[in-house]
Length: 499
Figure: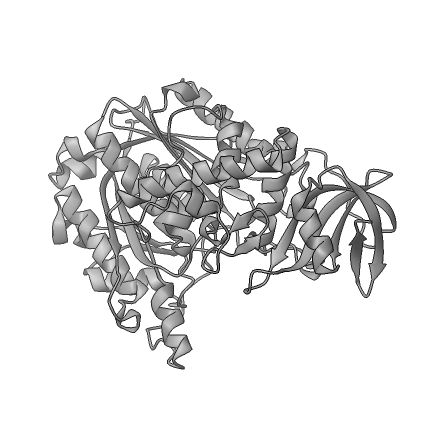
C-alpha cells in the first residue's frame, strides 16, 4: 500500500501598505515578497525554506501586468522552483490553488509550495491621477495562465449593462430579499446590522484597510461620502479595490515540513477541498436567490470529512458584497440567526478588496485561529466573477485520514445539467421581474435600471430601464420582484417599462 502523504499549511504572512503619500506605496511584487518572507518566518524556516521551494504560484495581479509574476517573485526570494504558476482572474483562485497544490503534494509531485498575491491599486490610481503610470517590471510568461480564463460576461449581458459586479450582486441581493418575504425596511436593517458586524471585525484586524468600525446607522445612511451605487448597496457596502495589501501561504508535505524542522505546532491540515462553477453566465442561472453549485459542493465537502456545518467553528465566506457570504451561508445550512461570524477578516468592503487575492488573507487568518484552537475546524469559501466560480475547503489543526478533493467533474456535470430558462435576445410583451437594481451615478442620483425577468411563456429576458428620475426612485421605494411591465427591443437592447 502506498505511503499516505498529507499536505500541511506551515506558514502564513500578510502585509498592508498605507504610506502617508500614496504615490510612494510599494508595488505588488514587493508586497508579495514581504508577505512570502513573513510566511517563511511564521513557519520557522526563513530564507532556508524559501530557497527550498519547488513550486511558486502567484494569484493574478490586476493592478499591474507583470507577465511572469511567479518567476519574478521566485528570483526576489532566492528560489529556483521547478514550477512557476501564474493564474487567471478570479477571487476563487487562492483556494483553488490550495486545492490543486494539495492534490500535487498528496500525489508526491510537489513537496514545498508558495501561494502569494498582492495588489497596489491605491498607489496605481493615485499615480494615474498625476499622469505618472507605474514603471514596474514586466517579463513575458512562458506559458498560459493556470485556471479558467473564460470571459465572465456574455455579449448580451454587456449590451444591457449587466455583468459588472456593482450591478449583478445588488440584483441577487434584491432577489434574495424577495424570496424570503422581507420588506424593504426590514431588509435595509438586516444589511446595516450585518455590515456593522463585519466592520467591527475589520476594526480588530491589523491587516484591514478600514479599521474605523462604522456603525449600522453610518453604513446605511446615504451621504455624499456614502452615496448609493447599485440599489440597495451604498458605497460602504461595496468591495473596495483601492488598497495596497499582500498575503502568502506556504504548503508542504509532512515529510518536507519535518525535514525543514518546522514545528508540528505550526502545522494546519487542509482536510478536503472542492471546486465548482454555477451556470457560467449570470443570465443563465436557474434563479437569483440560490446557488445550487455551492449547496451541492458544500454538502459533498462536509459529507467527505464527516462533519455537520454546526461542527465548523470558524467561517470565512467570500464577501465582496453582503449578498455573497449570506447567500453562501444559506446554501451551506447556516441559519440566519447563527451567532458565528461569516468572516474572520472583516470582508472585502471593510477589510479591503485586494483583487483576486482576498482569500489568501482569509486562509492566513483562519490558520492563526486554528493554531490557537487546534481541535476546531474552519471552512474557507472563495468566489470569482458574478457568484460564478467557487472554491471551498475544510481546515483543522489535527490531521485527517487523508486529503480529499471532492466533487470533481461529476459535480460540475451535475450543475451544468440543471435546467434554466432560455434567454430571448429580442424580447417583446409583458414581462415579470426576477431580479433588478437601480444604478446610480457618482453624484448619487439614479441613472438607469437593470432588469432580468420572464416573459409569459417562461423565457428569460434582460433589459434596461431608461426612465425619468422619479420613476427610478419609485422603483427603489417599492418591491419590484414579481411585478410586471412591458419589454420591447429598442436600438439593439431590450427596454423595460415599469408602467
